[in-house]
Image 1: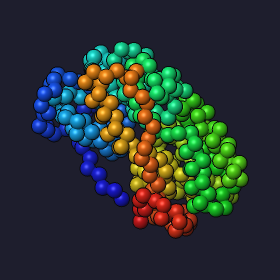
Image 2: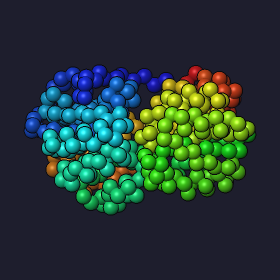
Image 3: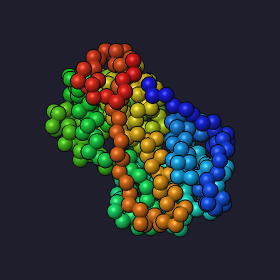
Amino acid sequence: MRRREFITLIGGTAAWPHILAAQGIDRSRRIGVLMDFAANDPQAQSNVEALQRGLYKLGWSQGGNLGIDYRWSRGDAVLVWKFAKELVELRPDVILAHSSPVVTTLLGETRNIPIVFVSISDPVGEGFVASFARPGGNVTGFTNFESSMTGKWVELLKDIAPELTRVAFLFNPQMAAGGGSYFLRPIDAAASTLKVKSVMALVHDDDEIEAAFAALAREPGSGAVLLPDIFTVAHYQRVIALAESYRVPTVYSYRFMVERGGLISYGVDIDNLFERAATYVDRILKGAKPADLPVQAPTKFELVINQKTAKALGFTVPGTLIARAEDVIE
């Protein structure tokens, strides 16, 4: 497993060590960061550490020449609204926004403060930007998934469970890109190519997640794909536990889910996105406008397999699949 150093978070603000301030940059600059995670979530800590690392490389240091105001909404719509309003009232030079609900809420509060987003699948479809090349307005950022990746997830599921005939796609339509429509066309294409039946499993709470897995367990040859939205990410531990309990092979979109017991994942390196986002924060602090900064797609992808989970579920991971993996957890 890849080792990570986690920062310590205190209250709503990350407590970073004081680093030597960069020279020649105005010490009064401030940014806001609104994360749709809980402050004590290890992945959130890793993401924010990556952002800080990227800023430091560019000459910015928390407590030195840059002030950073963090807010943590925990996937709670009420907190998203509360903290979005708070950050806008602080009038920072730029706000870094994590998740579609966060960006939507921030845009309801300001069309002037620059916003850099991270982990948005379909910013054009969501109406955040006019196009990737010319965002327009006060928003730009870094996407996390292309819709075509659903085909890859189904392929991986078929590789690890050759008898697969039925795949359920779990997502919350209130949180997923386009209500889930962003992924539907490639889902149908992949299902047809691989000769499996696709099922849309709409989940809004823990009970519906369990009902979805219970239904899958009753159908031989079933598997699941956990589509990426802020709800499914917040409930991934519940999904992992149910997948193990009902012995349903499940594919995830983030490596941290496999590090914590999931079977297999293929997706972007989210820490890398946060570190790259620091470059746009830096450029905006130095005078660039979001409208002139093109939206960037991910460049680094990871295939991660948990051998321990595979054995517990009764699956043998093909050697060809292991050879392709960036990381294999024993």
